Image (cartoon, rainbow, N blue to C red; front, side, top):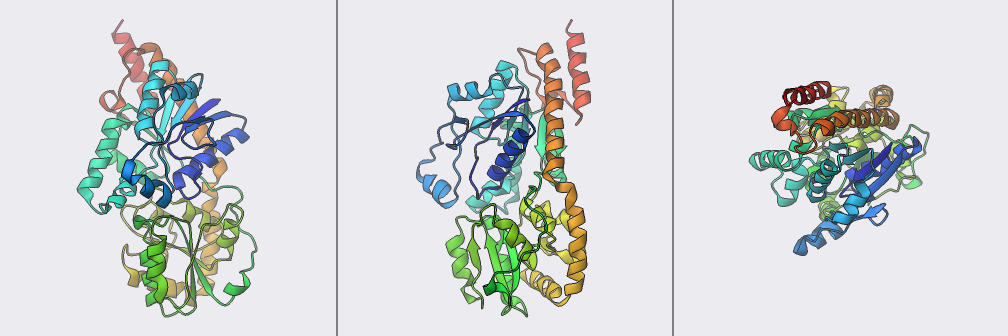
Length: 410
């Protein structure tokens, strides 16, 4: 297949969506597909200009390491034309225009839901404002997803969430997948950490990830003198978190680990904690349990990650640092139980392999290509909007409805 990826963010190592996009491209190419990328990243096949947010450019690019793409009509059309299918990752300016171009050129397209409203609202200090986040779900629908017939959802959690807001397109629940180089291996701790109990968290240094909660929990732990925190990642709150953690006996390690080094850290750590309030999937947690790490996960109602917990002891009350401290202490004191759980997590994580994910992505692309053959044949001038015409969350029934419409217009 000739597949084109439209990705506002691509190539940034500290952004989950960008990492997922790059991994998807690599895996599709390994299977012999011809894949092109349209983004504002200089390593893309078709490089778009960056959007200008004026006084906020410094905050977005330098502090967050994120740049969004702007429209260049000629580049977009060149990248999209002759594609068998176009996959659009984000519901922003370029994504909206890409859908219109696909419809004009009669090219099949699919979309994805990678940007949870809270990922945006947290930057405005509105991450916990339910009315605003609900408005964002509706805004995404009204301006982008109403024209989507196929949506890739990285978890059942987010598929259920958007269904609540009447997203009626076909939802394909497909994990972003754990890369093959992430696996259990025998790795010795670095010499300076051998007498420490290493607690790891992998995630961007941003408000919704709740690094602060883990720092407070370690302060309350009976074993705080023994615990060594590792915060793998990068982001705008690094300086603030460093200041906050000065009271800890062992200074946390703040570091972005490259692709070849992260698997070692995942394997030599003693415990993995995922305190985030907001998460569509949390591939970092999946990577940890793939390596046999026992996780302690926030039970927040806004995160899919809690569904990975195989034991109640692996969940803590969202926002409660005292409860988190107790769960950390429990696993420090019950090493044998942790070892038994580790084996269960390794087996459980096998279903999230990148191979399985790419199999399902290929299936979605093939379904879209088949569907749009009929869609454009019968509706070349007036595209059907699924939110109006498709009451069922089922591509086969969508197809029957398209044919029925065509028959009634003869």
